[in-house]
Image 1 (cartoon, one colour):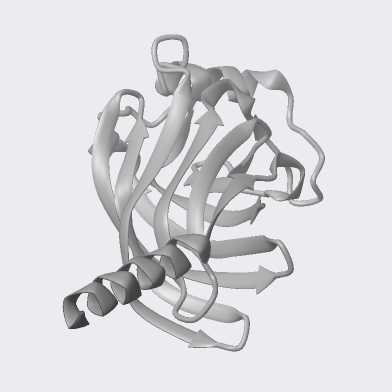
Image 2: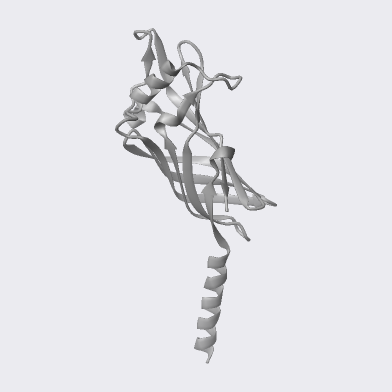
Length: 195
């Protein structure tokens, strides 16, 4: 009898745990992810205009992310000025060439786990570990993230730095090599996932 009761409690607990997890989709219109870097002429930034993703997140009780991935169309990266207006397409063409965007049309991030989770109210901070694939090469990346749960949405913010050469990407050049892009870049994360 005790075994039956224990099994019933386990199944009930498992059901509650599964019920508390929800599937979320990245909301493109509310996600402003940037790639920033330097050059010999000026600092630069690109905004990702076409992106998608899904996540399975538990927000009741301890904050957990069961799975999460995001995809950015490489040719949707657009160079923008500090005031938000666009540069001409020449800069973008150089970037697409460096990224081998014709052969590798997507930049993909897949979360493998989170650690050091701290939650206060509707805000959680944690360390995200996952794989980032750019131009066909995948590297492990680890960086701090903040997640804010509001209603049916979770907004993730954070940033991760890496070198283009770590993805076998030669930093782009322009005007016959007189303008050179720096090797160090930063991805500034501002993504909204909603049920």
